[in-house]
Image 1 (tube, rainbow, N blue to C red):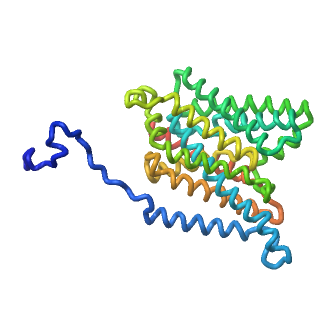
Image 2 (image 1 turned 90 degrees about the vertical axis):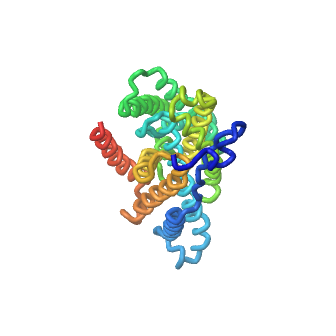
Image 3 (image 1 turned 30 degrees about the vertical axis):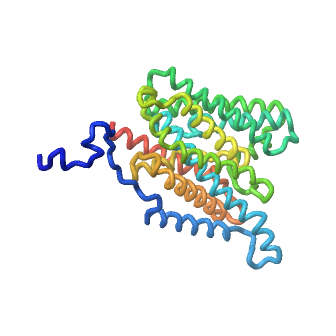
Length: 340
């Protein structure tokens, strides 16, 4: 040994003092993250000025800018960040990289709740519809987690397939109810997954997802420990069931709110966390800012493409996300197969 015990700090040599490892704290704002924030600001500015309507040359351009462009861009930012983080939390809790709200049936459950509220209370305000969607999304996500606890085969591919099967069953029930009550057209409009209908006075409830984002940041370490399994979490003194319940509530809240205001955004929670993990590893807390930023990038870029590809018409964001997500999903499956 090159140093004696007397050369060590008092905190280590003293028998009464606990042994503490000095772990250097990483900075929150690094140069890559600042560059990412600058890129996000550029995409947001581009989204504000892309569209058919000439907001610079028309007489009422400023009014239309405030009514449509600003709310739409804010909705892109909030929905992208919330759904990407929801996917990351769900993957952490299920210990599966292929799980997210649209592959676990959460989105379909939220749609069922919205449909039931529209049938029972057709004139219900947006907040009531949102509450119904959140509650059913919570129930559906708990059903999915409960099913996983009773399944012995936990293959990375079987789990999302089971979730999509459950979602297909719930979607079929929703379609049957919509056909029986002549609500199929309204249901299609609500679940289109487009930001075209996001206007001033209609998107404001989407600000509630900020609470979800903040809560995920605060509870990130708990989700990380819970992702190691119930036995490990219990051994370190964590209430595993309470953390799962918290994560389920946050996922349901984000999915229900986004579904009511925007619609279905498929595979967003699958694409973003996996891409971030490929480049940065699996540290949940340090990955959270990048998950938010990449979620905003993906949704904003898909929305801009949808606005310009067949101008003056628009392609729903959900359509572009579905194509992109299917490609990423297949690539991830092939990568998992190569790694055994």
